[in-house]
Image 1 (tube, rainbow, N blue to C red):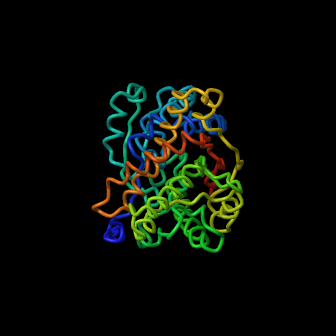
Image 2 (cartoon, rainbow, N blue to C red; image 1 turned 90 degrees about the vertical axis):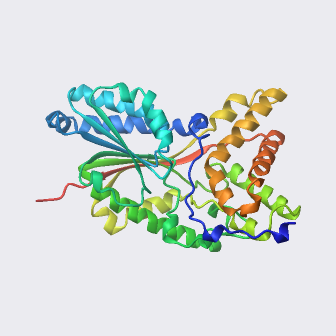
Image 3 (tube, one colour; image 1 turned 120 degrees about the vertical axis):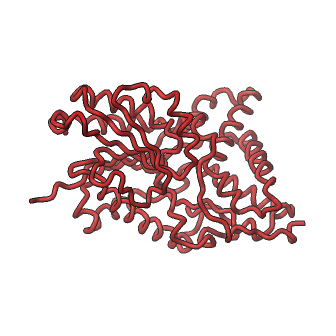
Length: 368
């Protein structure tokens, strides 16, 4: 019975990671390339004289913060490298991939990657939170990139019970008063991230962030996925299949900031002193899967295919957080949760659009 289950989540390390589903279902995430790549190419052109003068033995460093296995940024990195090589064909390039995920995924990707076949390319996977220092690239980073990652909060600086709620599973579902502590946590985490990036960037180096954002109302990324899981968990608790403790402990430790919150932080004096916000824009990228299927939903097979894909998308970024909340003798409930999620998407197909804020941030050149 549910009242006999006790959640042991508060004693566990809270380090949510993406599952192996992520790369093959991230069409919507990869669509960000069409937005970010032109800005990066424009930046490369603006520093072409500097690139041309770089010594061929000293690598130009590019980092992917929150890279997962490296797949999603690979096509864009190929195009960036082509632009750099057009300016300085012999220049070595060092790619640094940063994430807390197991490096096995990256190692498998890199073995067969087209990037690995290019001359003068070296790659390194650093298994570490992007909120931590990276002395390996301190003062050496030329281009930093992050997509769909910086909404994750730093779980190492608070106790596990910080990420708990009796009814909701994510901060953006909460009323303003309850949400306040997550907003402040996001601000503090971002300040740390930006200061660490500033230490890693060379003067004039740039950071390109495609941040998932809250554009108001229900326009925050994958809100249908979060809301469905919340409702499913409440349903399971009413049925006696989840305890109240488990329902409280199932929580995804992220927060989607508003454009106003992002811009206000970038305008803080301590940040403005070292970093310059060169460009800022918000946008919505339609759900790639729903767009392909929306005119075929009368076909049961197509409807089922879409429902399965959407459930995989949500599972990829929420499974580890859900599992942490479940009691040790109830981990099998994971499959029931995502089976019900698939059924809900079949009954009510809906898109998972990505709302973004695109920030281009340049490290200021200090006066001598």
